[in-house]
Length: 427
Ligand code: HOZ
Image (tube, rainbow, N blue to C red):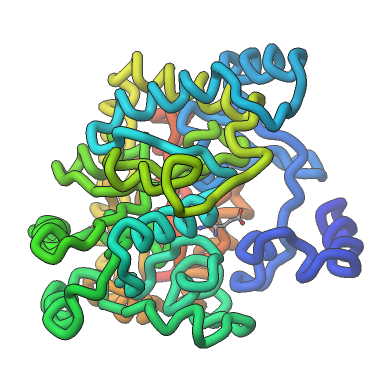
């Protein structure tokens, strides 16, 4: 028995499903999860000493690669000064200033501890600001595990086939209106029916929790226009795209400004951090300035701020990283697309910048319904081949691949070769 198997056997007796977040249980691929002992650069090492080329990057934040020495140094300096104060610090002011300077739509920002918390708080701020209750969310978008968002959600709930989680009282989701991703006429209908009651539209500007699904040309622009016409707050959930797709995230990539933006792990450089920010007049509804309450002892934690500031400062000062990530994405995902054509695979590759994924379906994947048509048994077989050959991709069809500055051309070519060998046998 491997050490990972031993640990998993023990874990399931003490932790639900043996894990602290469902997707990592490897349930949908029918394998034992690898217990990770350490990580460096583009590699993970498991408890048995196996090394994997990692395409998860802690689900996004490791833009500079794992255990980046510059980030580690800032973290250990901060640790020496104390782990948590529950009081204001200079690092929080620096972090707020940096985020506001990098993202033009963010005039004020509040730090929290996770993407879930950021979304929950941004929605509350939007409701407080507009005095309205309803929100629109899109099928297959995942905005964390807060009650109001667990309606046809992506990520783990899509993987587990429980898109509408139990334990959520009906009252918590009665004001959550659903629209199809890329279905602007569906959104128009909702606005026609109750536009003046809609506090916010929340969207992942690139769907990255139902696999990767791109917004069709004009879709985000039309959403922006509908929100402006109706006095509705447009919230971009940039937990995955923020500071990754471009310096100012998807907003820069697509040239659209959100009213509020939510961030997660990326701004903590891997530490548990989230934030929400946007227009000053909206953010000033938040206590202690306004009457929308939101708080947290660990919010703006000094060690987390040190890690986040180190990575974001580097990205801010080295815009070439974004160009390199784009080029690496073109090499890897472009290579995957070429392989699909060459081998005539019934597969789709969706990608933007450093994010991408492969779906096992002959039809274009543009929304939740088409993403669900992917043959998940075929995904499982592909996943296990990749893992056996030392390549660690997300253990679910409905997640993204993440590239980092630590991935080299050699890594990407090895990955393409490994995929090619698999598909030559299986197509
Ligand atoms: N829901 C996360 C991916 N979108 C997975 C979180 C985790 O297992 O760490």
